[in-house]
Length: 109
Image 1 (cartoon, rainbow, N blue to C red):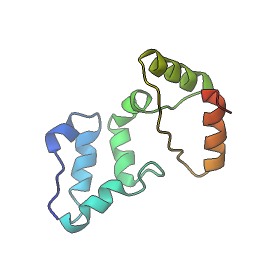
Image 2: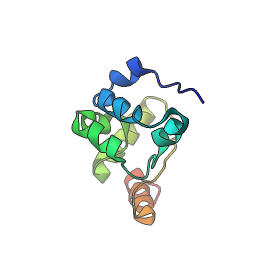
Image 3: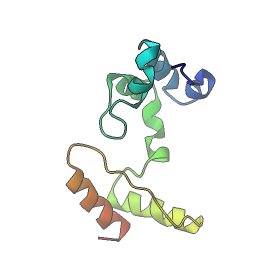
Image 4: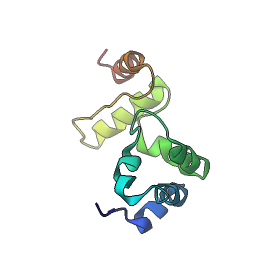
């Protein structure tokens, strides 16, 4: 399988070049699996390296992460923009806690 990784796009993301270079160390036949390893559940060593190289600066922009008030404010902003649905995927080692926290922060629980 030929990789469809677009280096120029990945490199524009803070920490992206570090992540891409680590992914490219994986044999091409397994690279697709490596890209998605632990996706939305755990951080790989590649992810940690990217976060350390500046990728952490984008977490607040790309996720619903923070205090309950932060999450609620982001949801309210989405509603103001006309968004009517959110796809939520809990992550981490304690999924029931994540579900409860999101339900409370979003006002559905």
